[in-house]
Image 1 (cartoon, one colour):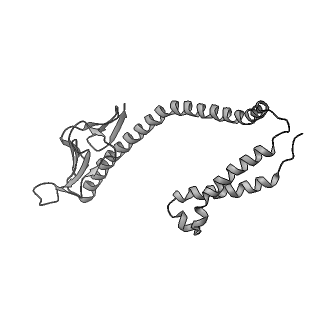
Image 2 (image 1 turned 135 degrees about the vertical axis):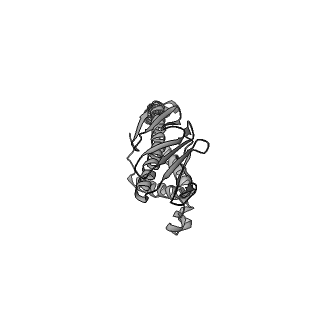
Length: 225
């Protein structure tokens, strides 16, 4: 005969599980101070001990008179094993799907980083041209292959040579590669010339390439390969 269930045990399990939960959230910075009752957070071992005692009690309570070890283990397996089997199957499916998704995610990340560096280069070109138009004297932007940076420079009236405007700016936080040193010079009439390199240059990251081409009047086109 099946013994009646003990609903009160379910309520007690909640408090034991709560103690274990509080013991684990101590890893969150500041949480121990936020809760205030440090003894409550440190009482997780009480919850663990309670579950061990409860398991022993439940096994003893649910034992049937005249039951055999074989019958006992059969009931335990039929109750517990299906849950483990389903969990294992879901975990296996998750691992397979993750393995399939990683290359796509990685490819998307590489493309995103390359486009970020490309957007930085386009901004440098267009903003430098705009400053030349607004100020009425030459500006230039210098792309460094060795440092993967760009430096804006200007040539105010009366100056003998270009001077840096601010400091060099990295194209990206990731190690992209420029195919050449490039200096693009902008005149107040809007024209653009390449005094170093060419009006077309490449940015490469993880075997992906963005080809930037600057027209004589500052329009920038990009082709991704």
